[in-house]
Image 1 (cartoon, rainbow, N blue to C red):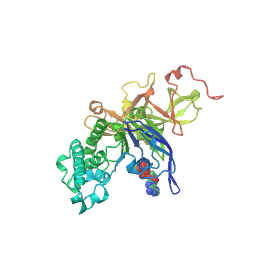
Image 2: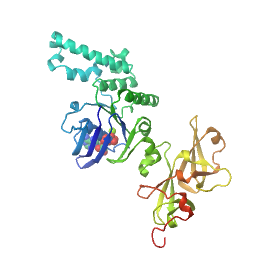
Image 3: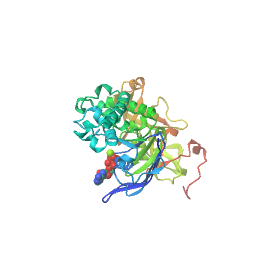
Image 4: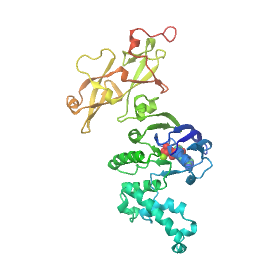
Length: 397
Ligand SMILES: Nc1ncnc2c1ncn2[C@@H]1O[C@H](COP(=O)(O)OP(=O)(O)O)[C@@H](O)[C@H]1O
Ligand SMILES: [Mg+2]
């Protein structure tokens, strides 16, 4: 059991700054996911925690002790890689046992001829076999211990790699995109397996992925990274419901959040496509902002659009995407080439719109996320602002 504390971790490769001072406290037993686009520094950070890479500045503490000077195997961490890194010539059992044979047997006991003679070695080997059997049983690999990795499916290989990490009984599991090589269906299955394994073991998991669905479904908390820094740290719901910036909003959620251009009018009131909203923000008039609307927050408006706290705009249905249990409707915005929007709909609602039909889409203004031109989230002054509580931000505004 161990918490992990990262403080001001910085790293450059030559002239390229890859991590720009990362602070992150991971609780004992937590499942924390580092998520972000390819190249943002996730692998570099997790390799620094593992001791496989050296940081230029800052410190790593595991279980309250600084480990910066410790070698990987002295840190009580175990890493699972995307590539599995199994030895093809060794059986599944020997692959899982490897960390134990390396740590428990002396060098001469591993040599082919001498090892036959040692009774002490046999005792150690029996202990190792028992530990391997216990892990193999947990991962349902017991019947595969004699096979070679090439004789296994992708999912089974992944479990062998997990087993090799588990057999060391580490305080912290470090996983770098461990599911990326699996097909879609198996990935979904392994998400559940990993989440359950985490519960069962009670160990700290630090998990790296570029897949926001993996991050959202398994983690206690998610650290969203971009360009070598953490943009936001929070529970999956916090990142989804209150993204701190446009980048987080765009990365988290599928289909991607809808973005609509809006402008600030007098008193900070927002205007969407020339129509005033009840929302107001603390910005001077004339500035551009972006409204983020999740696809489930949109609905088809029947009859008169508008009403208190309801925004609306016209759109034309481009395509219906049938997901079985629901539809994703893709709309073009009337008179605007560039932006489209997506809306989730029940099959019944989707049946009510024909392709190329002109419709009115509406949303509750409180469901809108507002982002300033620099991408920072803005908290609106809310529909209450419409009743005259807005204070002009500058003279003449
Ligand atoms: N050993 C290395 N030498 C030089 N550049 C590297 C090395 N490892 C990673 N990088 C660079 O550092 C950046 C971050 O890489 P990485 O941590 O692997 O990102 P991620 O895992 O988020 O995709 C990338 O631009 C990558 O090219
Ligand atoms: Mg990586």
